[in-house]
Every structure is written in structure tokens, then in C-alpha cells.
Image (tube, rainbow over all chains, first blue to last red; front, side):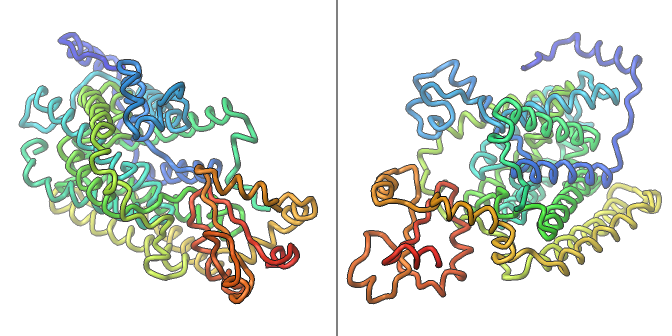
Length: 189
Length: 321
């Protein structure tokens, strides 16, 4: 799933820019209404909300199971997902996560926004951005497993169903990010 | 009979059920992309008050989702009790949330948005997803060192209505007003820090806000169905279960349930206290029939693998309760 960033990718980007004019993003309130409709449809039809990190973690366990299947059977947290003959990808959560990737790709192609590029603040190099994206990914996924859900599974879904714990998680996420924003302002400004 | 949510697995079978979830994920990813969630500087900008695009999308979605959910519950289309409400684990939620916040501002994504960024070939998004896989791996390896913390401060299915002891309708109105208030404040902050002129945004958003408030008020006026209402709707179906004796348990089955560690057995003894003190089954709880309505919220909050057994001196009495 990982495309290795190579020097050619920059050429690709320029070429693509000339071929396709990327369109501006939708009005945020309109985007929010559409996202709310999808969220409602998910609960209404299936009884479950939207999620991303649970499916992502099952992909991680799947890879771990390929490399060290014996190890999985010794870790209680992993046994539940991939112990013995269990396939960690056999879950509706994986379906939602996979759908997110396909849906994002299709929209990106339609609107001319699927192209190799690195988005970053003006004062850092691409390599710095990649490093911090990687570190941020580690932290976010770790926190998401600890809190039993991320911005989608806890804050968005639990927020709409008025779960008390999810509102706590939501405020903790935003609180943590705002508290740290000043100290890492060079990354983005 | 309340038809929604559907029990998809028994209705469609597993492959089609998975297809439904794939489609929901597709729509989720599509809306995230058109909202600009694959662009990390936009995601980070909200934390410097320059552009609150992400913040607006996010809270609009919560309010719209919430209003539609509780409106359909008020109209009896949807059973809120069958909806998955994230259980509350207070301290793991707080600590995990703060760690996520750090990951958000450092990495510029959250998991859902990073997947969309990966799908649209943003290299920073690809690195974030790779980091995410490593983070999951690290969590699996370390959680056993603090499993009591991870499983502690558990409050079950706790809602904002329980915490503030307010009716659902009032909470729905308050959340809606809070979101609108934050949108107004957010647009002012964008004007100060990001140099954006709120006057240039489409006027339609005022009408949208009005619709949301009216819907919230309507939900409060209609009110949520009570246990009696729900029973009235379920009665035709459930009464046939009674006549077919599907709800009764024989002593042997009870013994099996007793020893099945995958099930959470709750035995409710509805005889009077004198009988209970004379003899009762181990772990049975003595709850007089009149007190059962007060206990219903606690019963609903029990996990899905819970089996309730109501017992008395004779079958007729236990059924009536």
C-alpha cells in the first residue's frame, strides 16, 4: 500500500498540474451537512457509526500476523483479532476503512486532486514534514487505541449519539492539539 | 415494531453486509475528500485560528447527524437502544485524547483524513498512515503493562443526558446552540487571524442554522419514546414469543448459562424479601416488581452478551412482572 516517494514523483506532480486543474474544496458547512447525512445513514441502517482507526489497526495486526504469527498468540490484545485461525481483516470495520480509501481516491480523481505532492508549512523541508507526519501518525494511532476510537469513531460518531465518554475524548483531542500548537508553530507557519 | 437499525447479517448474509459497510466507507471517504480533509495545512490551520474549515465541517456533521438520529427516534422509526453508543472509559479517554491531540498537530492528520490523503497520493499522508501502523503495533505490545488502567474508570453506556440529568430534547437543543455559537465565534477568529471576511460567505448558512434550531426544538417538543411506548410497538411480536414459550428457560439451560463465561448472567428474583432471605440462587438479585422500572436504564447499559432471567415461585408471577 505504500508508494515510495521517489524523485520522479515531482515530475509527475508538475505534469499532472498541467493536465488537470484541481477544483476548490466544497463549502465547509455543505461538507458538514453531507458528512452528517452519511453518519446518520450509517447509524440508521447498521446501528454503527463511522470509524477509521479500528480498521487501520486490523490492517496493522494483519501485517504483524504475516510476519510473526506465533507472537500474536501470546499477546492478549491481539488474540482477539488474529489469534489462531482468525483473520483480522474479516470485520466490518475493515470494510469501512477500505471504503474510505476508495471513496477518497474516486473523489480526488473526479476533482483533479489526486496527485503526488507534499503539503506542508512554508518554513520546513519535505523531509521534515515526512518525519513529523510519521511521528504524528505513531502518536495518534497509539492514543486512538488507548481511547478506543479516533476523531471518527469517538468524536464524530460518539459525539452525535451523545456518548458522555466520546465528548470527553473530543475535548481532550482538541485540548491537546491547541495546547501544543504554539510550541510547534514553525511546522505550519 | 421498530424496523431500524436493521440486523444486516441475518437479513443479507455476510458478503452483502460487508458490501453495505464498504459503501458507507466509500461515502465517508468521498465527503472527507470534498471537504478538504486530505490537505494537512488546512487541518493544522484550525489550531492557529487561521481557517476553521475543518472545525466547521466537523461540528456541522455532529449536529446534523445528532438531529436526524433523535428526530427518527422521536418519530419511532429508529430504536436508540439498539444504536451502538461508545461506552465511557473516562481516564483512558482523556489520556488517549491528549496523545491524539499531540499527534494531530505534529502529524497534521487524524486516521480517517490520513487515509483520504493516502488515497489522493499526498506523500505526507502516506507517512502518517505508516506511522499509524507502527503506533497500533506499539499499543498492542505495551497495553498489557497497564491493562488495569486501560479497562478502568468504566461507566458503561453513559450519555450526556445521564451526566446532566436532563431530557434528551434539552441536550439536543443545547448542543445545537453551542455549535452555532462556536461557528459565529469561529468566523470572527478567522477574520482576525486569517484575514477572511465573513460577509463573503454564502447567506444560505443563516437559513441552514435556522432549520437546525427548529428541528432541535421539534425534537424536544415531540420527546423520546418511553419504555411503555416501545413495549406498545413491540407487543404484537413479543406476545407470540410468550405463547410459543420461547422466552422461558428450564433449570438445565440456566445451569449451562451459569457456567458459560462468555455470557453475563443477571438473575432477578422478584419474590418478596422474606422468601428471598429464606432461600435464593447464588448471585440472584432481589428486586421487587415495583422497583423494576427504576432499574431499566441500568439493565440497558449492560453489555450485549447479557442474559436476564426473571424468577419467582411460579411461572405466572415471573411472566407478569
